[in-house]
Amino acid sequence: MEIEVKRNSLENFSSLQDTDDDIEEDEDEEPVTLGFVEKPKNPISLLPHFFPSKAGGTPAWLDPVDLPSEKSRTCGICGEPLQFLLQVYAPISDKDSTFHRTLFVFMCPSMACLLQDQHQQWKRRPEKQCRSVKVFRCQLSRSNAYYSSEPPKYDKTDKSSRIGAALCNWCGTWKGEKVCSSCRSARYCSEKHQVMHWRSGHKLACQRISISSQSSESSTSNGRTTSTEMSLAVASNALWPEFEIINEDESEFDTEAPENNDSSSLVPKDQMDDTIESLMENFEGDDDKKSWASFHERIAKAPEQVLRYSQDAKAKPLWPMSSGRPSKADIPKCNYCNGPLCYELQILPQLLYYFGVKNDVDSLDWATITVYTCADSCEASVGYKEEFAWVQLSSPSAMAP
Image 1 (cartoon, rainbow, N blue to C red):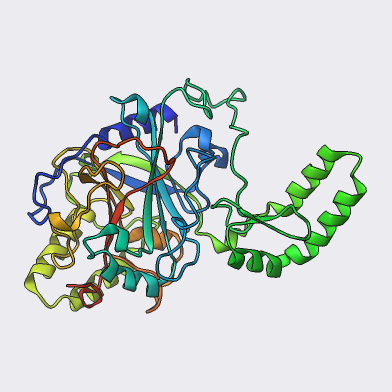
Image 2 (tube, rainbow, N blue to C red):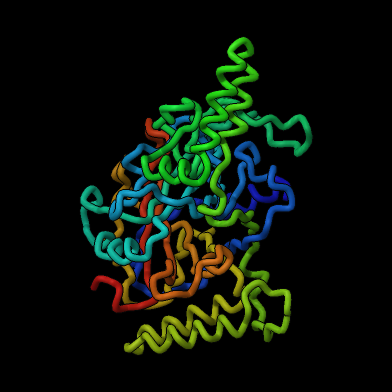
């Protein structure tokens, strides 16, 4: 997909929002852009200099140097490095500082941590929250140190930035600040990832790298190339599968949802119906049942959507349930300018189906993840500014009152 097409659609939904409307009011059907996932036709299109929207795999960092800090990149519950969920390219055209703008969402893959996260998000003081879901906003002006001021041409003239922080050899996600003491080539974001990489085969590769480095001391550049090739193998089976995110206006689906008899559909209708029925059984209150019926009716227009983007100042999340929704007071102020946060997008549980997450009791699951960002998309010295996520689980009993 041409970058102009993606950019135009994303500029629509990334317009500034306000928080004047009460979050607990019924949702109005404001214009929405839907996100769908598909396997990339050309994986190169997901590289950072093409400014992609993507899910799974490793992030295409917008600022390749000033990455989130060690404290920011770990789960506040278990302390393990967070896993990349998705990113959305969402520039704001009326400000130079937001010419390039991307939202990154990370989460701990542990459902036990997500359950504890529910109690954390209700705390009114963000500095006291220990979250397992984190959102980062990164933005750059048109003229910057990493990318051309002209849009990509999608030919051999497009050049990726050679500037960037060294990444972890296991997850390929976070800055690799720890170095293997033996080969001095492999880098890690945590001791856990170093151990996992060692057990998965780096123990043998490390010896070969050391030997190769010693035998090529007279040719420094060749030695570096060999080390890189042998040590930069990311453990792809430890990551969620990679997809490109494609956008469509919800209005294009504003017809009565037909019976899904298309055998090529990625979400089987019988599986979806079973999920809906099982969820309905969990709802004891009429308000939750009413909310879920309304939620499903709207989602059913395009059942394979994984994201919903706001494109209007009055747009609000589409809540699956009335319980577990935040009030206006539950949404904190911006960490950097103390201004209001506004709803910008939400992530639906359909994404877990594409990631191949099993439907077990202990498997990761949610009803919706809503993302709130600084209404002014403020500037700060830090490259990645932490925003706010609100998670609503599918089981009311698991949510804090």
